Length: 317
Ligand SMILES: Cc1cc2nc3c(=O)[nH]c(=O)nc-3n(C[C@H](O)[C@H](O)[C@H](O)COP(=O)(O)OP(=O)(O)OC[C@H]3O[C@@H](n4cnc5c(N)ncnc54)[C@H](O)[C@@H]3O)c2cc1C
Image (tube, protein in one colour):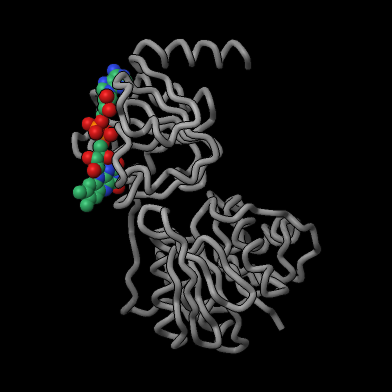
């Protein structure tokens, strides 16, 4: 019998590193069952990788055309498992994870806590609210309480084991199910996913144009193997795509290093990045509020500094 379920996050058929954080958080309950949903022959293929990072059991759910059915296969799989053997369920706090959590909570009549930053053995969890200035504890009911965990909130600790592998069949799609026939390719290229990136280069209104994002920010991100983010003003001005907005109404990031370029530091932005381990900012206004939370602040013109920074980084590679 399992003590907790984790829904495995994947990137292009591989286990997303954020899964280590989910498994680490789930381990407070005891043995962890990792549930991996994918195309035929892909879910079973990652079982050994999941054992190597701490899963005690792996349930592989292999469905043809799984991605065209969006989140429904994951909801079906977790519903079947938790209805048979109830236990806490831990899912990543992203758009699809939160949607899966809500649907599961309705199906299982369980409580759900969204975007938690810590989970305790007594089934309470911690939320970080008001722009990460206050932490609150919340309790959740039901035999299979559901949590979505913010990326970067828990330090992932790998505990190698040999996972036992089982497979699970879920109901086939019916004519009533929504299926997607075509996806537009992602525009992020080879850069890491923003919420889980270890290095984030964020651009604000001070970057000045979409061209400058491409010519100044993206080369810095690529030199450091990081992801690019943007403020809401930069998004509103169409300098960068809205999917990359950091802050209260965007993505929350918690990287090892955040570099803010031409970002003033409004609370709505800093609430989405202030848990970064090191905050470096370049701004030509020495009174910009972002300097108050910076570990390293450089007062200057980003267009003079960033090219020199890239040159120096590349020299040291
Ligand atoms: C309900 C609500 C929700 C919001 N949600 C979000 C959110 O999720 N995310 C978010 O980011 N914002 C959000 N905002 C907007 C937020 O309040 C700010 O307006 C926004 O974050 C400011 O963006 P910015 O720092 O790019 O622009 P600005 O505040 O205009 O700052 C630009 C900075 O660039 C500097 N600069 C200019 N030129 C240069 C140069 N050459 N070199 C170096 N520095 C330079 C300037 O000194 C300035 O400090 C929200 C607002 C509201 C009301």
